[in-house]
Length: 494
RNA sequence: GCAGAUGUGAUCUAGUCUGGUUAGGAUUUUGGCCUUCCAAGCCAACUGCUCGGGUUCAAAUCCCGGCAUCUGCACCA
Image 1 (cartoon, rainbow, N blue to C red):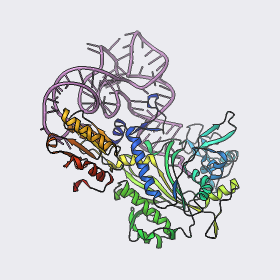
Image 2 (image 1 turned 30 degrees about the vertical axis):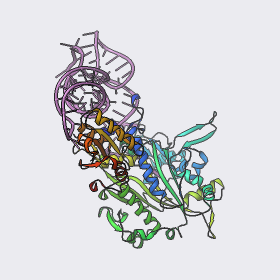
Image 3 (image 1 turned 180 degrees about the horizontal axis):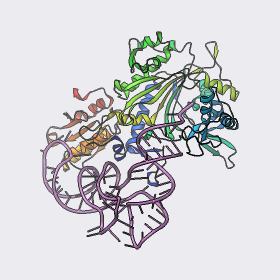
Image 4 (image 1 turned 60 degrees about the vertical axis):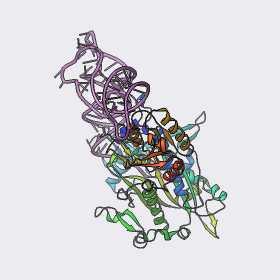
């Protein structure tokens, strides 16, 4: 058929540009019926998996609008802003501080806009493209400002990341959860970034959904609190900074990452868990998954360790970042302690410390897109080979033909399955067309009532991935459906 | 944001250069007929020239502008 993922995503109700009928705005997307459900299921799997890592990891929620002071403390007010200069001839935009740094070799951070203008003139810098002159520098902050109250006197911004919600709520939750470390606070929600040039579909959006788990812990004792034995002898796909260019990502034993590369055991343990999440829960093939280490230059200064989690996506032309694991030290809580004057230092087992943060950060929209990209195939019609737990519909029920006796049994089975699973009933078109429709939205199993079944009380169950069918007793369907949906029974063993 | 290319029913596209009947096709969707398991066939129906302005007797077609998409550059704490 040759249809691509994007048109399937639109045609079958997954995702497309927001406000299409008015010509749309770049960087904003809406989810349709299938997409919203798929996203919800991904989030459910994510929550189940990561909150299960520790009894003291919890889901919270926080506001999308934050007061300026909190973003001053987090560093976003100053660092999420770029000083831009534009060429007055060709209009090319450049980072003013980078132009100066490249010329002088000295940091231009902290210079005021006027000082930068002065420096640019002093150094005689011209447009890199056309040698034109520069307009005066102006700041471009990637945060969306929000006017709060009738007079707009309170300056606020849409949050650029969900993480701050966890940091701002740390102290109270530490009390609520009876002063224990580690404490994990997970947030799934919207974040906003005024990207200069959003591109590549949902990969860079101005309004995006993040799923983040902020783990507050004592780096000295955290490792001992984890089931580190689990990762013994296990390998992780990693691309280390040192081997870039020389080789591609390769499987490395967890022990080697710890002993030879000096990564903290708690960090490697969470890498191992993230890999398990992707390979086993979400169904990403092992050869399309890797951790990509960020060098000191590439990562933000407060990140002591930073690996991107990348998946190879054909729609985006290679390995792309879907998530990140960051060891942020005590940067976040220390900053909020300093700016808010609230004490973030805690006392656990007689030891006083400002907890460190291990951040697991996921871009939900990217991950949902990755599901479509990875699981899409056009070998017969379009097929989405989504794992049963993620598929918008788990089952579909069809009468082989639109005849009263078949229809009534099919409807009866549909109502039965619908009570426990997301199930679709369809009697329109040929049976092949109905199977094809289900392939396109990733429904893993179709139940068909036929004439043979009328006589001996059976129905057929059709497997999306193989198109094979098995005949089962109608009375067993409820039990079998549960097994198939939960993965405790495989289709082959029916 | 800059430069270039592109924008036709739900989806994919012909037509645009060289302005001129009811904008053509394929797929999808809906209804009907037929049909005992993988987008079968037949009949019927719905939906379209990205938006705004201009030129012209006449614009999907030419010109200007907006918006969006793609590619390159820049950007991506």
